[in-house]
Image (cartoon, rainbow, N blue to C red; front, side, top):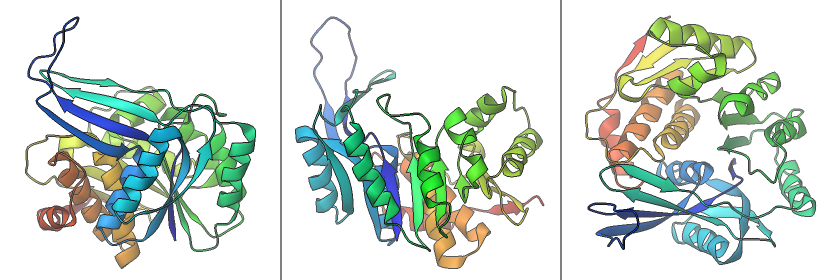
Length: 306
């Protein structure tokens, strides 16, 4: 089974305003509500690609009930821990001349509730896949991802981590199956400028030397780069389209990659489906549909550098 973890999910309230004027009443031209959070995005794309999976994490209050019910309506399984204090956050994304985001805080998670979550993690078995996505709430220890990976390291579980800077660097000692920073996050990790593809390859290989089995770097309009566990270096092309939504594109790439790998055990196929999934979401107002992903897969070319 595939499990996704979203520690701080959200309701994403996406609105379009012709002109956002501070200090005045602004009328919304268009509005959408989605269950949000990086792991939930991965869950939705995995399901769109016919991969059964279970969403894990924490929810609270009436907004938490919305998350559970909306996933159920989408035919998705979840096993969230219900938190007493606070409520699942609401993130407001305002699309106008510029894009503005106001992200909520989220609930306060107590030790007993964290222990309940750990009990769920401890039930994972050999052959499972665990995807850890996004930031760790301020009420929890920043070593939480490390603690999770330590709990499962004695089992044959493939762990995927999509997080930033130290959250990612600190889990490398547990040899995650896949990590997915973007090129800007890669530069930030090593405090360098990445001016060429060779620069990106050099530091991606460094992450592999530090413990990651596979390193997937999303590069926006320049495609995606994979340094695989068998030391291949692969670069994908980018499908053609107009970017209308940057939210969830990286999560879609992770889901597509895992889906492609499970179907074929082939890294070229995995990268191709990952790149198509990321592009399809970037070209859509919501997360990508299966039909759109299938269409874009045909456009993606894979170049083998090594």
